[in-house]
Image 1 (cartoon, helix red, strand yellow):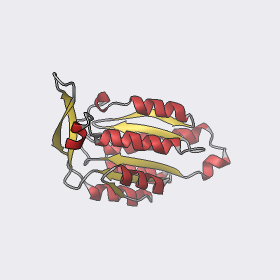
Image 2 (image 1 turned 45 degrees about the vertical axis):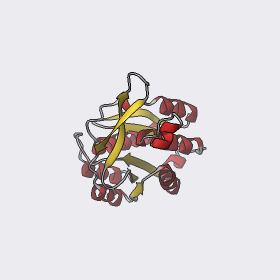
Image 3 (image 1 turned 120 degrees about the vertical axis):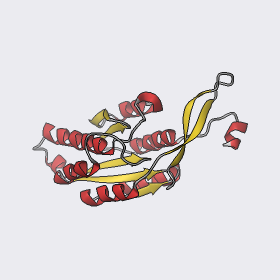
Image 4 (image 1 turned 135 degrees about the vertical axis):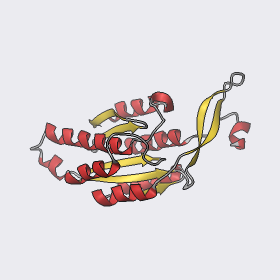
Length: 202
């Protein structure tokens, strides 16, 4: 943190690291349809499955931490919306043999335990398994669940100010989601490990 301040720069937070890493992954795609669900207290479809990588990258770049209510972690809703998006894609062209044989994957990136949402993670995982959709949860951050999060800007320097906040984590829950859907559970403590996990999955 001090080294960043000495260079008059702000250190990246988990959200920014995830955005940057996901951008790298999208840029590496050529034939894969990609969609994104953003979730906190609730889950929202940020963009449906598409091959328009340019639009995806622009929307990803514009996404801000304060765009959604962070007072929760609706893991079940997020998986459920991902499953619904993949079902809709299949319904658009159910007779396309290429779509029938294509592996469908949800990558669930989270830094907390389930808090909120009206769909339980176990129920959402069952929905995914019924449609042969594999969920790969990635737990971002350290086991103690503490993270440095932005809380505002200093009035004089205009620098972003941070505080450490406790985010309870539940690796067992994420492992169960992976096992139910035929996926795998990963941990990432920094950008390098997150990138490595995503490249292993894809």
